[in-house]
Image (cartoon, rainbow, N blue to C red; front, top):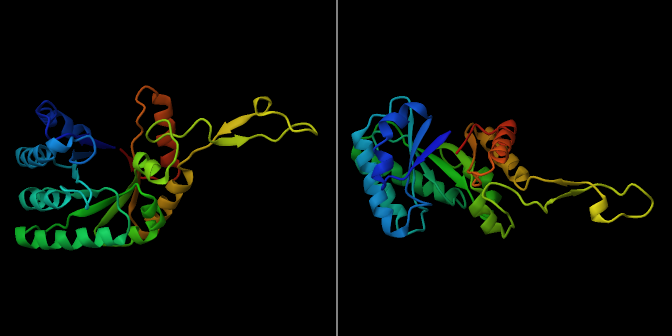
Length: 247
């Protein structure tokens, strides 16, 4: 599991000494959930928290802002230059195609050489656009730096124009209606209805691309914290389909 940290919030980063030993990955979040006027604070906060702490066997990741945002380039340059020696993975949102991975790969190579970083920083792509899903095979094979890929269901739903009721979940009206029992078609209310998983095809496609290229597939967030059973079910399904982890 990946534990997301908002680096601009001192009340959260002050607890890192106790959090680090309990989780698989600490991720400094610079993108979603960080207000536009706090982006630079979050970036500075991440660099400071990396310098203050040792992470041991716990992975250190950061999710930067997307490449076509006003903050993406500075996220990469400043974080790698100041904290790249400890950084394991950069999570890249809204990847549309292999060209996004090629750009980040080359920029990382330049920054690592300049800073004397010996261990290559890996790339984890978030699959959250319709174009990205269409190019998932090419994305998975785009660079030796590829660590893996995560499904971003909320942004993907927006990109596709899908109707969902909660991030990472489905829609109660999306399902399969049982055949009518008699000679004449019965109404919907008289027949069994089985809700279906909106994400099944996309997750399977992502898992196939990742397995084929020897990288890891992750499921993304489930946003309805008031329904732990649904969250558990969604994550269990993802693991059963071959996902290696989840947010």
